[in-house]
Length: 122
Image (cartoon, rainbow, N blue to C red; front, side, top):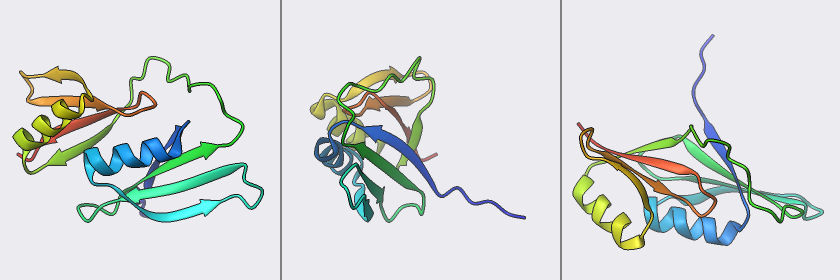
């Protein structure tokens, strides 16, 4: 029996704002959409050409308050082939929330507070 990682899910308050963030910050685009016929939820699956792994964004119509991410001790990591350019772009966007220069990594924060780790290709 084999298992392949397929996707992660993040719940979001403002779907359009999140879609714009992920496209600008990480070049992720919508590859699949699912909408509830009654309008109670929307699912958007994001990906790029670098990996088959997808990020599912879930928007719930009745959710009005920010999600409680607890201690936010989880994250999704992205490897980049141009760490310096990525860092400069994310700094310009104002989304870098933590840097560990000793490890050569940093984290960006999405509109809902999820942390995304950026690591160089080694």
